[in-house]
Each structure stands twice: as C-alpha cells, then as structure tokens.
Image (cartoon, rainbow, N blue to C red; front, side):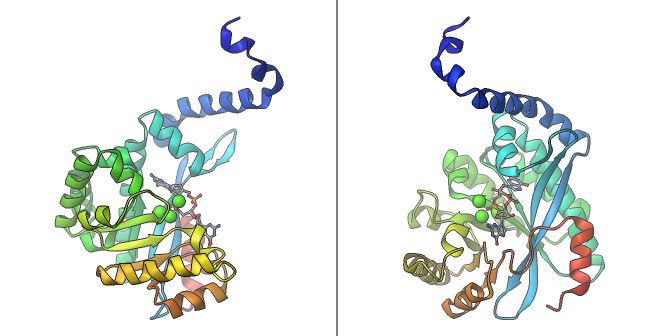
Length: 277
Ligand code: C2E
Ligand code: CA
Ligand code: CA
Ligand code: CA
C-alpha cells in the first residue's frame, strides 16, 4: 500500500474516494461527450426591465450523461478546464449558439445571444479569429453575440486575454463581465477592458430585499456601470418584488427563474410562443 492509501482519511471517508473515482471517469469521458452529442444548449431569457421586452438569452451548456444522467456545469466545466477539453467545448457552444441565433433571426427575432467562455479560451491566440469565422459562417451580426467573461478568467493571463477581448471588441462583439462583484479585480481592471455590460452576481440579487448590504452593492454597481456607459444586468431574479426593486434602482436587464429557468431548445420555443413580452 502506498502512503496515501494508508492515510486515515481513506478509511474514515470512503465517500470522498468514490466521488473522486466518478470525477476521474467523467474527466476521461468529457472529450467523447462533445463528439458524441451528449451536450445540449439551454436558453435562459433576459428581460429589458424598462421596455418590458425580451432582449436576449444566455446559453448554458448541459451534459446528459448516458449513465450518470444530468451532470451540472459547475461540476464538469472545471473538469473540462483541467483536462484541456474546455476550448473544444466552447467552440461547440459558440457554433450551436450562432446556429440558433441565425434561426431566431430568420423568425424575425432580434435576440442578443450570450455565451460563457473560460480563461483558457481567452489564452488561445486563435479565439477571436474563430469567433469572426463563425459569425461569418452563420451570417450573424457581431452585435448580436455577447461574450460573458469572469474577472478571474481575465486575470489568469491578462495580456493574452486583453488582446483577444480587444479583437472581439473591434469585430463588434459585445463583452459582459460575469459574476461581477465576486472576483478580486477592481475598477482599475474594469477600465482596461473594452466591456459593454456588467452582470451582477446572483449572490447579491437573491436576497436583495432582505439584505441591506446587497441593496447598497446593487445600487452602487448600477451607478458605477452607468457612469462608465455600461448596461447593468442582474441575474438570479426569482421574485417580482426583486424585479421591482431592480427597476427602482435603475438596473437595465433582469435574468432569473421569475422569468424562466434555462430551457431546452424545444421548451424555449414553446415558452417564446406563449410569452407576452
Ligand atoms: P453563470 O454563467 O453565472 O450562469 C448563471 C447560473 O445561474 C446558471 O447556472 C443558471 O441556471 C443559474 N440561474 C439562473 N437564474 C437563476 C435564479 O433565478 N436563481 C438561481 N438560484 N440560479 C439561477 P448553471 O446553468 O448551472 O451554470 C452554472 C455555471 O456554469 C455558469 O454560471 C457558468 O459559469 C458555467 N457554464 C454554464 N454553461 C457554460 C458554458 O457553455 N461554458 C462555460 N465556460 N461555462 C459555462
Ligand atoms: Ca454567465
Ligand atoms: Ca453569472
Ligand atoms: Ca456563476
């Protein structure tokens, strides 16, 4: 027996080992998941608060594993990053999202389509070029694509990331800072980035009405964003009361279960058909 296996933790906490075995198995299967069509893209609507109309969607990836069933993205995206599969995953997401965006366009729907990208995508010198080629291939106007990035993704390799973001910006793609407020970056960082949108993390939005600190944070983020000429989005909007408060605070866009949870393509089409805004 190796040292690690003699550790008391291996005896007392077998559930950890089982869990890591599943993780290992999933890691090795991720590449196949992209290739074998086990991924699915879900869509969550974004509401223009003032106009009370649908302005866009966020695309969120789902992995329906043949044995383990639904694997949450919070679990497999980090695995994809560790195994170097996340760039292939992002490319699949972008292709699928732009094909859908094109289809909406043909139905006369002008929806801004947002995708999430990881640090490794921004470190890839070919990333902006890939996006440009995909926009051309699907004939989607660059302004219809929103790329959501987290502050930590930018901080992983700021020079490389800034180069890619600058190129995306020059193409006319819109950039959004995701999970705003949870990273360690500052206004100084924000000033260096060619962004169009701030997305306030749901941890500040969920309890907006009961937590005075959250109210202050949301209010000052809206003010900061507007002073910098940015649109401000709140995610995690679950109640009508929170939506009303966001409206009072001048927040521009809302996303959350109140409007709809992320929906599979067919369910989203049905939702579109019956929604009034
Ligand atoms: P995120 O980008 O911050 O996405 C928002 C998450 O909040 C989504 O979780 C969404 O389902 C959830 N959410 C939306 N509305 C509400 C609400 O009203 N209340 C609550 N409690 N939650 C809400 P999801 O889909 O599980 O995704 C988790 C994370 O996984 C995402 O966080 C994102 O970081 C990552 N992710 C998802 N899809 C992709 C992808 O295609 N590429 C990459 N790189 N990351 C992705
Ligand atoms: Ca996001
Ligand atoms: Ca977010
Ligand atoms: Ca998040």
